[in-house]
Length: 273
Image 1 (spheres, helix red, strand yellow):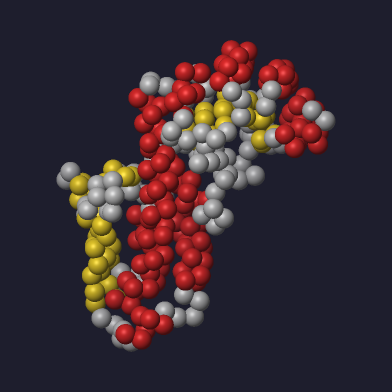
Image 2: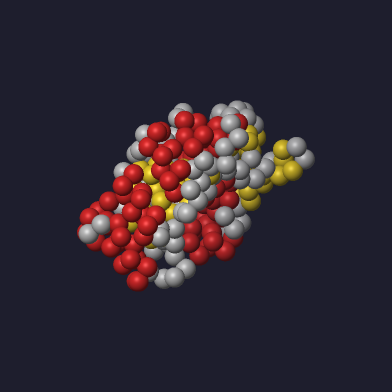
């Protein structure tokens, strides 16, 4: 996450998280440390995984006090960065500054770092499974994110080696079962989307049956999602589509079972796990 994105988009969420934890004052810290005193703390990895959220971790402290210094450790001669693999017990960073800031900000900073690292680690596990079997299927995320955490969780997916699906409802046209029902079928829904949606937006149709797949291809959908289909049905769908649209599959997929779809030649697999 670059500095511009951090300040324009992420800062407001970080501020909300800090305000949630400190709605008036940090009573405990102010009681034992009423005045400035310089301190230093060390950030350690507590298990093997992919580290993600280091810049967010740093921003929590600098938002409380711009003079706080966060010094990231080196690994293999280079400074540790988001997306790196780390090991249990590894020193990741040193934070230097007002002890009151270190104590008041640590939980919020760690909440971001732990959650983002967990997502990045789980993502990398699934991505590695696909890579090991030589699959070109790209793992992407969904909108099943924690409220107020989407920008951070989707960044964590990217840092783990996955891709991002649409960020929000304004980011792309996805016609799901309820949209299709409301419009009166696949053909009507795609035609309406073509007529009204911005021309730069691709149109994706969620299909649960081979009949819907046929209708989506005929209607000219750009992307066809195979939703909760079994392996044989997806294989038939991919063969029928035959490159006339990009393909995506979704439905209860995670690192433990993603290999089962690796042989299908699907372009994207989306997971909210």
